[in-house]
Amino acid sequence: MTASLSLILAASAMIGCGIYLVLERSLTRVLVGVVMLGNGVNVLFLISGGPPGRAPIVDESDASAMSDPLPQALVLTAIVISLATAAFVLAMAYRSWQLTGHDDVQDDVEDRAIRRLAAADAASDSYDLSSGEGEGELEMPEEEGSPA
Image (tube, rainbow, N blue to C red; front, side):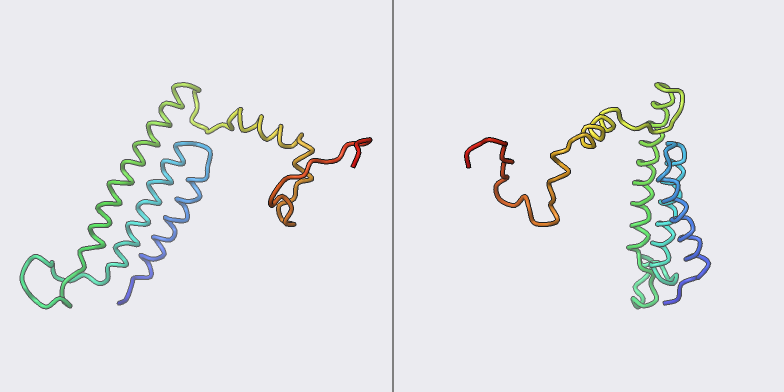
């Protein structure tokens, strides 16, 4: 089985650009990234299908001359899934535009509060999971002047 190098390069470029765009904060760029990623995966599915051959339902010839219908079915399924994902991201971008006037994803207020509380927590800094401490019961620190 031989694959076209230009198709492999085109698919890898689409997947790479799609992953880069999905990691952006703007939902319109995420939308374009999802579409590019889906198209790149579809091209890879078709490359993996092997060389073109006769249709499997036309006649009863030998199986080696027929094309494999499974990658084509997977591509049809992937098209439906990427269309639904693109519609969902488009709806989120439109709703974000209605509410805030832009489609950038913002940090959550609760995440920032939890991060700030975790940074101020001195007890958590002394608890080390990598050294094996913390397994079993937790020990309470001894206070000054307590009988031991």
